[in-house]
Image (cartoon, rainbow, N blue to C red; front, side):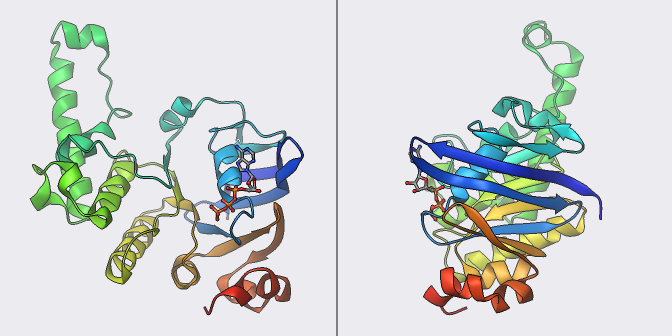
Length: 255
Ligand SMILES: Nc1ncnc2c1ncn2[C@@H]1O[C@H](COP(=O)(O)OP(=O)(O)OP(=O)(O)O)[C@@H](O)[C@H]1O
């Protein structure tokens, strides 16, 4: 399998705390990789350094053979990398459709000048954004709610909307920070199905998640972090059998 993302010796220190300690792993094309670990293990910090949200102290991340580390967050979307956050990033006063259309900007070629002169390209781009948004909303079953204010939706539906926005410009790599957090069982199942369905189209996922049963069900490979260090990596079966993992994490929860 060709490597899409290579995390190489990533380290992040906050003063005297080493939150991420020399972590390396890869995400292959069309693969779902999960990062798990106990509370405070360093998952979010690892995720933030991978997605250029903060610079690492040392190490680097390579994406499609090029250095990702050092880039600005806004440079990720044109590289076809999208990311969701632990806390919802939904515009509550905008409609569901408007929220979804925000995700289309990457595909659009419109700039301020062409918009100001109302060039034909603007209309074409708007139509394209509209269609992309409709397709994404249909995929997550939100089409019938497209004219509702996003803030009126339940938390679970808002998460689905955020997912729709993250996938609507067809990113090659999708980074999801706790996509199942706060979802009930039915919503968690649905979100898992969307991820697996999208993976089947050839897209890759890297996600941080606490819900073990879901991780074991949908991940091709799991990276386990404890006290900032990678303590295990492998298939769900490998990881569940790994004694270090059982001791550090899985022992705390029934899988
Ligand atoms: N901005 C920061 N400044 C100082 N220390 C931080 C900062 N961010 C995280 N840390 C510390 O780094 C360590 C790892 O935290 P992180 O949030 O990455 O863990 P996590 O595995 O995502 O935890 P959780 O599962 O609870 O979300 C913790 O000891 C945390 O207190």
